[in-house]
Length: 121
Image 1: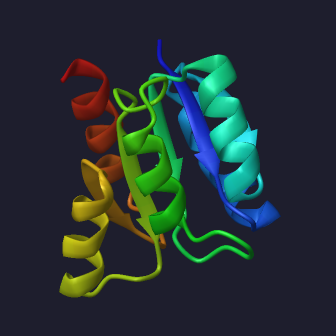
Image 2 (image 1 turned 180 degrees about the horizontal axis):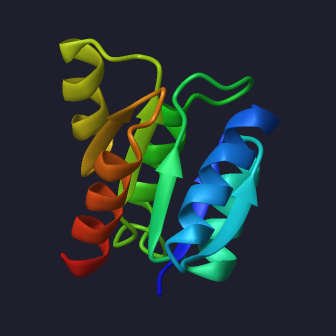
């Protein structure tokens, strides 16, 4: 069982992702913005982070860059879960420190595979 931090500003997306992740037997933590995500990641040290890109305040790209540069959180794998699905978005996301990219609407099999790969790696 992994501890999964879900970062999204949409209550609907949080509900959907939380339900899927918990059905697979994982524990979930929730952050509704980038600042909360950084704070929770530092305090709780989740096994993996599912990160939205488009959020008010700090984008998922900015949050991931901060997490990847912080010694306390740099080893936590980040998977982007976003409606942005362009090749440039994927490349930029990986450059910020993410290890995966899942497009919304989420295919449960793809998401499960990404989480499993991140936790095992």
